[in-house]
Length: 211
Image (tube, rainbow, N blue to C red; front, side):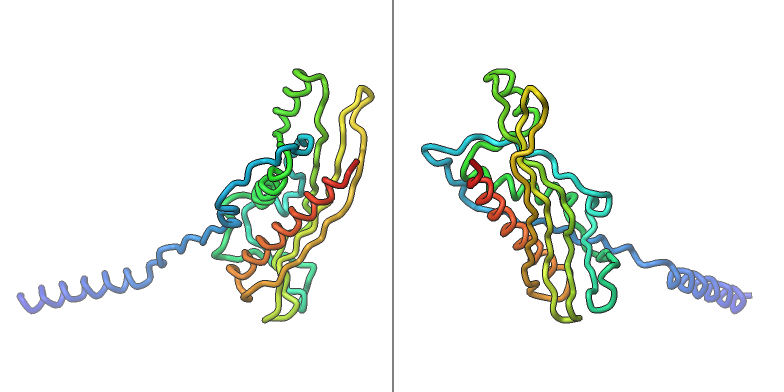
């Protein structure tokens, strides 16, 4: 009887171990990225800052409105967007880009939210100009399996509100690419962050040139 019990116990243990071996592994949580902390010290506005501007929310399609970190294999099929499986942005890409642009513009002038611009218009009787952006491309582009860069393309529009409605003042496209230090998700993040910083500087310079 005892040998039989031992055999049954052994069989049960073996079955339990076998069941454990086929259980799925604990899912790996995707690594989250952003553009870094930005400037460590915030510089004060100049003594005579430029006129305030309202920075609208960035307009985009559903492709870029999520938190996926996207890449293209230009050497294979550049028309196909692919998401990195284990890497995501900490917030939707348009929000990260807008925050970086706001930081850059705020070095030269007050930057207002749309609601703040409306409140200022009611109080002062004059509506600040509005800066609008359309996100057209934001991806890690691979020219070859080892050579890649971060690619950002924006359409920038400056408008003002008049009694007759919104009036177009100026518009331009901004396309920036920066080399990736490595052919993987962390390299793509660094390249896209650098491209965003460069685009923000270009937009700030362009805006300053507007009459």
